[in-house]
Amino acid sequence: MDCTIDYIKSWLKEHLNEERYEHSLGTADCAKMLAEKYGVDSEKAYFTGLIHDCAKCLDWEETEKILHYIQLEEGEFENPKTHHAPVGAFLAAKEFGVEDSEVLSAIRWHTIGKLEMSLFEKIIFLADKIETRTRPVEYREPITKLLDEENGLDKALLLCYANTIKSLVDRKLTICTATIDIYNELLRKTSLYYAR
Ligand SMILES: [Fe+2]
Ligand SMILES: [Fe+2]
Image 1: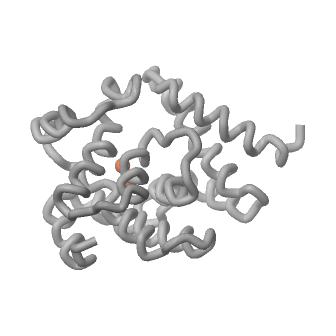
Image 2 (image 1 turned 90 degrees about the horizontal axis):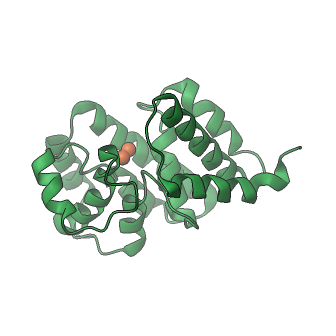
Image 3 (image 1 turned 180 degrees about the vertical axis):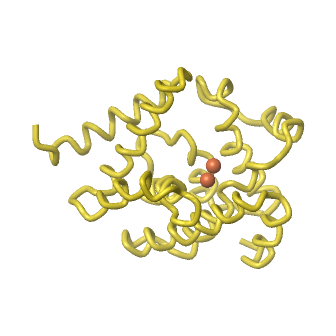
C-alpha cells in the first residue's frame, strides 16, 4: 500500500461527513482489536477498516458512473445503501493504489457479506457493526458479548444478520437472497452450540 495512514485520514476527512469519519476511525480500531484476537494481520485490518466506507459520501452521479464497471449481486441494485461497498473497493484500488485482493474483497462485501467469508472478511464486516465510536451500545453489546463464546465470531455474525433481517422486515424492505443464504449458513455453522 503506497498511501500513508496520515494521507488516508486527511483524504477521508475531506470526502466523508464528520459522523462517517468518526465511524471509519472506530471501525479501524475495532478491526485491529479483532485481528489481534483472531491472529490475523492487524495493521492490514486497521487500514481496511479505515477505508471501508471511503465511497459512502460520494454523490449519486459519481457513484452511478463507477457502478457501470461493477457487477452487482441480485437484489443489490435496488438497495442503494449497499452501493458504496463495491464502489468503495473500486475507489480503494484507484485512489489509494490498493492491490491486496483480501482488502478489496473485505471492502466489497462489508455491507451484504457473502457465503464462505474468510476470517479477514468476517473481521471487517463485524468491526463495521460493533465499533464503539458511533454504534449504539444497545445494538453492539449483545453482539460483542458473543465473541467470548465458543465459535463466537460466527455467532456474532449470525446475530448481525438476524438483526438486519428483522429490521428489513419491519421496514418492509426487500431482502437480498444472499442475506438469507448467509443467515442460513451461519445458523448451520453455529447450531451445534445452541441448546435446542
Ligand atoms: Fe459501509
Ligand atoms: Fe461502515
